[in-house]
Every structure is written in structure tokens, then in C-alpha cells.
Image 1 (cartoon, rainbow, N blue to C red):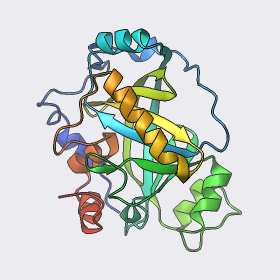
Image 2 (image 1 turned 90 degrees about the horizontal axis):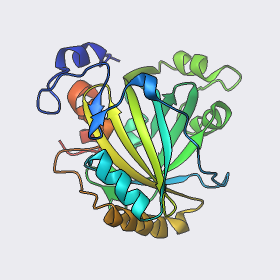
Image 3 (image 1 turned 135 degrees about the vertical axis):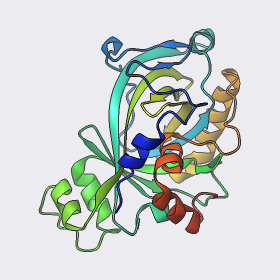
Length: 258
């Protein structure tokens, strides 16, 4: 697998109208420094609440967003920074089924598609995934996708033995709010891209339509603007700009449009 990192270094500065990325990002309507981060006070979720229903929107002014969240009875959850690495084999066997293996800092996560593509979409991407979190749970789930995965070894070693490598890596600064059962994330990625995500969690596929309605209702309360044509989430934007081989495979598989 060819790493996207060298292409990324060559391409930085061409996203977001050609403005080059700086170490202390400008976004959310103001400057956010790494040193200003504080811990997220997470809302408690049921252990069974493992289906993520998420839609993506254009990033608004942080001041306007804060005012609207407060006006409708929501609260700020805090700021956090994290690094994501996404893994696959040389044939991109996982991503070609819209399945995504991620290591966020020290936590392994697997996102498995739920429903048909026509049912649940957010712009150019699927909007509903079942989330599997934690090394043991991810290892167990991956045995259905990766032949010969040795579950007796640490996951990183087992994946390396199956010729898995990271094809994407980026850092994100995130500010979070909660409102009416949804989480609102305002993200700035270190390759010069920002986005707002509104997410609800549910425990079964039967609950997905209701969760999707709630996400859309919160989006309306916040005057959230949909992404324009050709724009997507952080990972899809990263792939479109830095990972031509991954993009070609996703287009071939019908996951993304060319």
C-alpha cells in the first residue's frame, strides 16, 4: 500500500481556498490553541447504544452556535484534541465495503455500515454505522472480515501480520455541545478542513429513523447548512485530496462518486 503522507505534504495549502494550515488553527469563528483544551464531560450512554446516526454540515460561527445551543437548552461539553489513523490492507478490503478501522489515539474502533446506502445518506456519505470500540471487541468483529487474523496477539501485531497499514492520519481539534439528545461536534483538522457534525446514538436499527429525525430537528434549531456538492466529512475530504488509490477503490465499489 502506498502511503498518502507524502502526497499530503505536497498538497497542503490547496484546501480551503489555498489557505495554508498553521499549528494554532483558525476556525469556529476564532482561534483555538492546543494549550487551551480541556476535558470533555461526556454524557452517559447505555452500553447498548452502539449505532451512530450522524449528519455533517458546514461549520458555522462559533458565537452563533453557542448562542443557539444555549437558547434551546443545550450545554457545552468542552474541547479535545485527538489523532486518527485509518487502516486497511493493500486491496482496501474493508473500505470497499464501507467498513472503517480506526485507531483514535490509543483506542481501536470499527465502524460497520447499517441499512442500505439509499436509506441513510449525508451528502456523499453513509450516515448510519454500528460502532465497535475497544481492542477486544474490534478484534472479535474483524475476524468476520480479515482471514487469518490471530486473535491471540495484540491487535496491532495481528493486523501487521495480515499486511494492514495506515493509509490516513490526521489531527483534529474538536469542540462539543449537547442538545436534545444529540451531540454537536465542531471540528478543525490539521490539513485545513473544518466541519460540523450532529450525532445521535441508538441501540437498535429499529431506533434509527427516530434518531435521524432528532438529528434533523436539532439541525433545524441550529440553522445548520448542508454541505455543498462535492464536500464531505474529514476522512472523505482527506481521501479525495491525498489518497488517490483509496478514492479510486471507493468509486469502483460505489461507496463514493468520482
